[in-house]
Length: 64
Image (cartoon, rainbow, N blue to C red; front, side, top):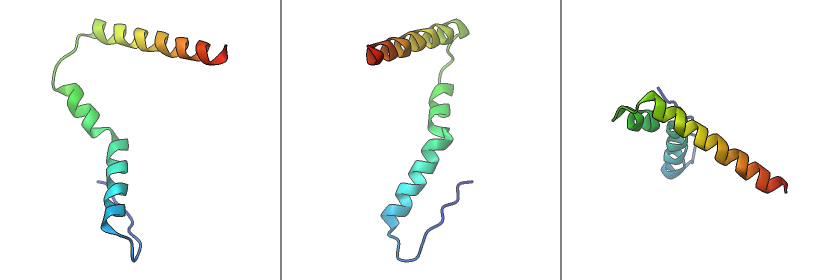
């Protein structure tokens, strides 16, 4: 359960902003979206390799 400490005279908008930030960090929405449809393990491995290659490419571009 997510708990948010709200100070006195703090607006509701700020409290909601804090809640949304904490909720996003838990990864609930991401997990729900990933469970909506099954993805084969070979496809997930392929996507991870593509992401890793892209990150390496970006690092090489930044260093040169």
